[in-house]
Amino acid sequence: MRTARRLGFLVTAIALGLLASTGSALAALTDASGQNEQATSSRGLDHATSSHWGWDYTPSIGNVAGRPYIKSLRVSNDAGNTFVDLVVPDSADGTNGWAPQAATIGGHVSDVYAFISPTNGCNTSQTPETANCYDPPNRVSVYLAHSSDGTSWSENFTSTASQYPAITSSSMIDITIGFKAAYSSLRWTWVSGVPAYWTDTVSTGATGDVELKFTPKTVPVMNSGGCSQIPVSTCDVPQADHEYLEPSLILSMDTTLSPSLAGALFGSESAFIGSLDGAPPNLTYGIAAPHKNADGTDRAGRFFALLPDSVLSLFSTSVASFDPAILSVTRSGDAGTFLPGWTPWTTGANGTSGEFLTISDISFSAPKFTVARSGGSQSGGGGGSSSTSGSGGNANKVK
Image (cartoon, rainbow, N blue to C red; front, top):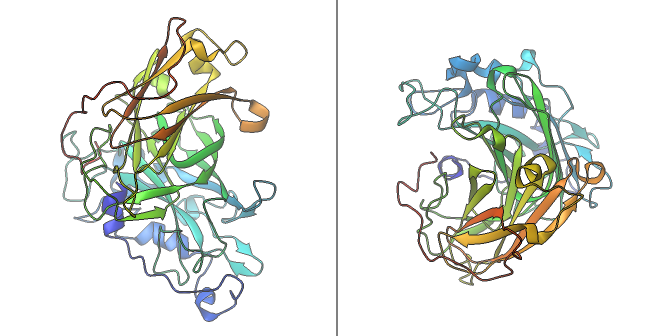
């Protein structure tokens, strides 16, 4: 998961003014730098070793040829009015290991790239088994990183000093991910940020794409583990060490989950991780984060979930007939505060027709929120319910 990847990640950042981007540091970055990093990194991308998982050790899907890939990646810094390509659209194919070519912006190569990393996959010394590792991996991590020299990459976008172009907590990122027929068991998707647009044409046994537009938001960063288990269960770290902007998403490819979760999208702000359990008519989302921000103040996060019309129909409602009283939103796992609200999504503006749930004023550490048919009673406004904690387990392993 991200914790393990972060500890092994070189976060060397060369101070580089965005307006003074003609220096030799940018010249060292080539349009194939991201391709090389995806293909040869020993941190768990395409190349597997005896200590790192990698896509070239997933024979069940044809290895690298079967993994998801980036079809397009764009960013807008004017509220989504105009977008700039960070990679050349549809440039990923079999000739370059399904890693797209970096785009050129204003005569300079973009130093922002998206990487596809297997989570809970196997390394070359392991035999796939449920208690050990998976072939194919049951989760996929997609994350953005930037580099000024093509060799040192950083997931931390908190400072814009070494980014070209800049990505901030006000940017809108537009990413399209392609799926191969051999590995298309997509269930839920969690994003670290606020979703604004979503389309999904993925179905089991067939090729398909997902497109997501989102605004990235900060996440708590801990020097020690304790919050990264999936399904979300516990978060025993009282205070974060840092608050970083790290645009990323998790794709659950877990075939043991209900097919009715296919295409489910949710996200969070100021939370470390999220997961989705169950199936309609009871959807239970979990998120985890320390109670305290890095500066010692109390954390208040937000959660976001799209319930498309296809899911609303399982609750015997639709966007056209939706009333907040139809569904209840309750908190369990850890007692605390929360405030739910609903906003309609339309196909034209948001890619998918549905109801968009926003839960604000969330206190942590590992709450669960259940959306269920309320039987006509009004959805709860704020305040927690149960003080029963989630189950224990190894909080450092994503299951």
